[in-house]
Structures are given as structure tokens and as C-alpha cells.
Amino acid sequence: MSVVNEEEVAAGTQPGAAEPDGGGQGAPQRPKKKRGWIWNVVLVAIIALGMWSLFGIAGEVTDGEGMTFKEAVSGMNAGGVALLAAVVLGVMIVDCLKFCFVNKAVLGRVRPGVAIKTSFLGKFYDNITPFATGGQPMQIYYMTTKGVNVSLSSAVVLIRYFGSIYAFTFIGAVCMIVGVSVGVLDGVEGAALLQAAGWVGLFVNLIIPVFIAFFVFFPRFAMKCTTWFINVGVKLRIVKNRERVMAKALKTVDDFVVSFKLIAKKPLWLALFVLCCLAENFLTFSVPFFVMNALSCDMDGMFFTVLALNVFTTFGVSFIPTPGNTGVIEGMGVLAFSVAAGAALAWAVFFWRVAVYYVYILTGIIMTVFDLIAKNIRAARAAKTAADDPPAHMP
Image 1 (spheres, rainbow, N blue to C red):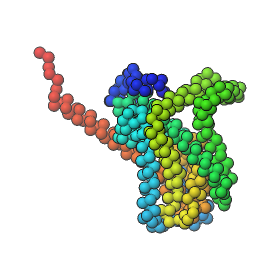
Image 2: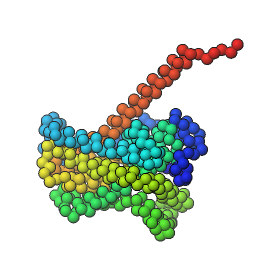
Image 3: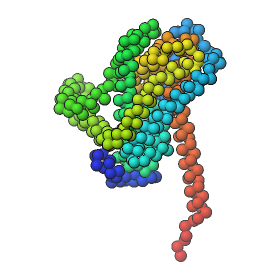
């Protein structure tokens, strides 16, 4: 991810900034899709694997006594469904608000339409790429097509990215530590696996936040540690190019510092942004509880238990390189939520995945189709205008 110096970003200009139509020298090119049909087939296969693992493991856990789809739907309560819908919508709104607040701090304008589409584009491409790597490039590209130059687009996207990482790991660490202390894993199928994988996932997700924090507050010590780790990697033949890896590590820190300085100058928008980051992750982790509540499961006093179990599940598969951790997270979810969902276990996990994963894929597909239709309509209108008003012939 490329972020230029702070003066260029703060000024809002740079040579070759993108024009509103996405042109302009120096504007980022739309990420190319090589052999996209192959990746689509792979994605469908991974999703199918996830569904197979979900219902297969759920069947074993419930000894074949699980509900049918008809029984699960008929047992839903209207109040619970409405509350679940409100939570899912709340997650979407809060993520859009993050972009609105960052836009206000960096661009000086909220631009709600751009914020909403930037949010959903990021969610869509994050959910169809390994390790959620596709969202940021597409968000930056989209913002440049709306007249925001590369520097500002990168700053907005990176602020949201770093804020989300810190909120995700903070809430995750708190819930896991408190969860273990109050025994949320007691009686859970595969508790040892969930706990071990969860702590490993938390460690992996803490690498970037801790790395950045050390460079910001203890730069000399952090440089020595980073150099030592890179040298070890070279000796183990894990790292092939010492200079390139070091440059990439330092650039990550520089991107964070430059981006953070921009929003730090606007404390009100920074505070609202941080609250949105925390709220989005908290609501997302709580979705399984509201799914089970909608399915009329007995959830009395189970809110934090289900929340913490979801944290263990999410962190426990966060290092799996499949899109949305599909194929593994469903099985882990079945193990985690078996203590609360009862006979509705399979459908609880299924609707949870719909609410936090498949809904964004569906939304992204709808947006892509709509954009394609709109593009074709504009092209047809342009062709008609050109035909109705032909250029004058030279004498």
C-alpha cells in the first residue's frame, strides 16, 4: 500500500492526481483479474466444502437429532429476527460511518455515498480473497474514480484498516482473557482445540499492532529486534531478500504514522472513529447470540459466553488462507456453539455465516451487476448522442 509524504496528503494534491472519471496520470490502475473464472470455481468449491463440513460435524455433535430447515424457520420468533436484522444492519452502518468520519477528517467532507460504496466494496473483496487482501486496493481504486487523489485515498483506507486491526485485537484479547477466567470453554466440544487455536490466532493478529507500537514508542529497540528476526529468517532461508523485507516493514510503520497524524489533528473525528471501530467488532462478535435468540434457543445468561466463544472461533481460524476462512470456520463454529444452540446448531452456524459473510458476497455481486448495467446504459446513451449529433464535415 502506497502512501506519500504527509505534506502531499494534507494538501490534498499531488502530481497526476486522478480526475473524477478515474483518469489522470499516476492514478492507480484497477486491480487486474487474471483467470478470474478459475478463482470463481475455487471460491464456489471452498464454500461447498464449508457447507459440507458444517452439516457433517453438526450431525455428529447432535447425534443426528438436529432440526430440519423447516423446523428451524418455523421455530423463529419475530422479535428475535428483528433484533438480529438490526444488529447486522448496525454492523454495516457503523463500518460506513467509519469511512464518513475519516473522510471528514482527511478530505474535509463526509461524502456518504462514496463512504457507503467504499465500505461494501472492501467487505466484498476481503471476503473473496485469501487473508482478506483484496479489499484495500479496490477501495483505493474506487475512491480515485470519484476524484479523490491517490494520497488521500490511501490515507482514508489505511486509517480505517489500522483502526479496525487495533479494535479487533483489543476486543479479542479482552474477551479471550476474561472468557478463560470465567470458564466459557467448560463443557464445549473440542475446547482444547478452540483454546489452542484461539491463542495462536491472537498471537498472529497481534504481530502488526505490536510491531507498529514498538516502532512508534521504542524505535531503536524495535529496529534491533526486527533486524535480528530478519537475519534469523535469512539463515533459515525463510527470508530471501533482507533489504526488501526490512523496507517493507519500515514502510508499514511509515504508512501508519502518516495516516494517524492526519486524523489525530481532528480529535473529535478520531474519537468517533475509534468508537465505531470498537462497536463494529463488538456487534460482529455478538451476531451468533442474536442468531440463536432468533431461533428460539434458550439464551438466558449466555450473551458473554457466546460472544467469547465466537472470539475463540474467529481468532482460531484467522490464519487459515481461504476466503473468509471458509471450510474451517464452520466446523469450529459447530464445536464452539454446541453448548448453546442445541438441536438448532447447524442452522445457527449457517445463519451466522449468512449474516457476517455471505450477505457481503451477495451485496457485492448485486453491486457489480448494477455497475455493469449502468455502464452499458451510459455507453448506449453516448453512442446514441454521437449518432444523433454527427461531427460536422470539413468543406
